[in-house]
Image (cartoon, rainbow, N blue to C red; front, top):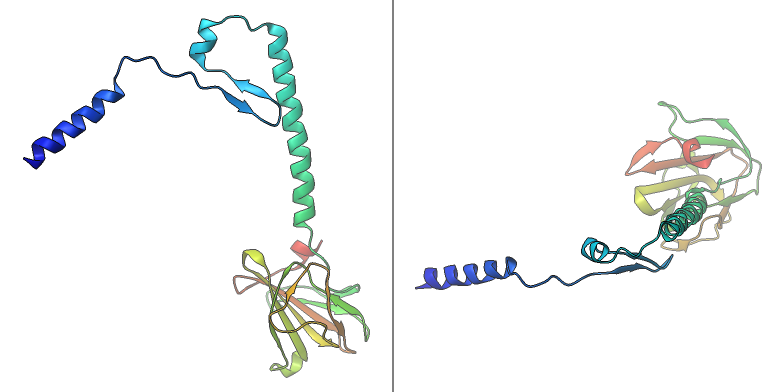
Amino acid sequence: MWVKFLSIAVILSLTSCYSQSPKQVVIVIEKSSHLENINHQRLNNKSTITHKSRRVTNSTIAKTSQTFKKSNDKNQKKSSNWHIPVNAKVSRTYSKKHSGLVFNTHNGQEIRTIRDGKIIYIGDKMKSYGQMIIVRHPLGFSSTYTQTQALRVSLGDQIKKGEVVASTTSQPFYFEMKKFDQAINPLKYLK
């Protein structure tokens, strides 16, 4: 009984797919340039489009795509910039044996965050690093700021790119970046 009912329902639903009723014409209006995407049936029925209007449409499309590309490039450049943590020369770079950067700093220089993020650690458990701050950033990135003093943030604070979080000590400032807990070369991002 159920099999017959189910087979009838399937047959009825499939017959509606192959009906001979005329299809509804769909016109899509692209709002950024006020262009119409014309259905092929409608185009065949009406041959009133001139070559001039096609050229205008194509040039409008080209101008719109160029404008979008330029604005998108600007947004990518703005969003891809990373802030340098301190204004000092790098005295030791990243290598397989050295997973961060050492900056040649003097006492009291401002330390700024490289990106927006959240403070996930403040402490001095590793004595050789002094007071340390770790910030978690979007997309799996984290940054570590060591040899800090005069903290201006607390654990759990949300911070913005370029915000001052602390100042340097008399020891050289050490900075490290990770992506998903894997050390990465900060110079690839901080250029």
